[in-house]
Image (cartoon, rainbow, N blue to C red; front, side, top):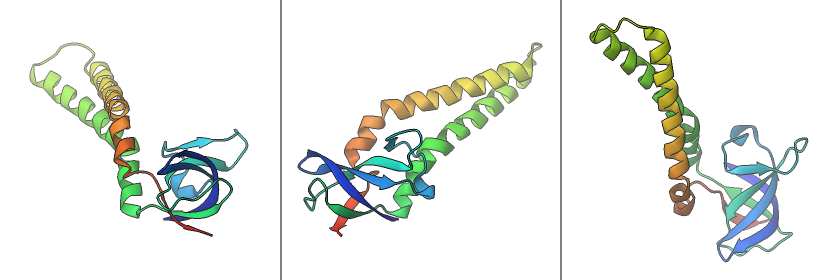
Length: 142
């Protein structure tokens, strides 16, 4: 997936921040910070190995597989934890012949598992950021 934008800040010798227009495929993956609530512009951290400078109009690229993997981590993982937590607790409580509010307890277990998935993602956020696998790469100055 290729996008174009302008470099607005140099973070360090290999990272910059780029302003670009919101793309429907990356509407809210978590890697972007909106400039204003009305704006369709985003500020995105990019891998700037080619040395673009502030004000440069650049093109960035991110492999579709990596975009899909990031989406899976952000959206699918919590959903899987919700469904698994609910189903496993439901069947486990059924197996021990629990005589209480089975659906309520199972739903709460599902929500707890979802919360745990967000804790896992939050705890490993630095690892994902440091891997640089999930940030766009500046491929050329336009």
